[in-house]
Image (cartoon, rainbow, N blue to C red; front, side):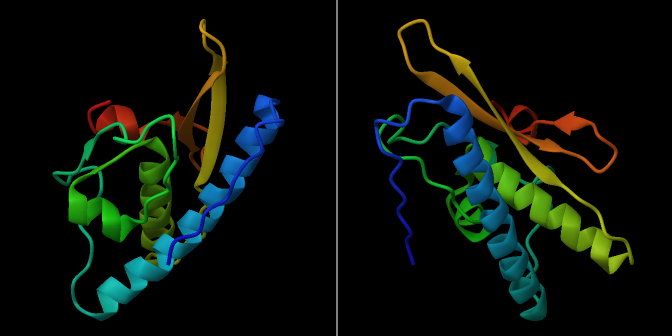
Length: 142
């Protein structure tokens, strides 16, 4: 199923766009957790994102559409971008911690920078349970 959300062009406040993206990332993490459990139940678990052959790649439709790809799609095509990796990595870490009897919060952090030509560039990273911020995109070739 594809879900499309339009953010009206009149919304120019980057905080609002980042807030919407963070909410979508939290939902992507939830979906990925379900996919991880299904794959494990079927005896075909996903490999660790960070040690896999998956690499960072800008979306070919960049600037037109932002896709929040799930973990299954990332591994099928062999690439993803920052939001894709946030959803997959957080879900894998949360599920691994639960198996070890721990509850951990791995949450998306979305920030932006104003571009010289106008508009904003958005990027997503992860806030770890210990407060550190990590960037899976950089670890995977960005």
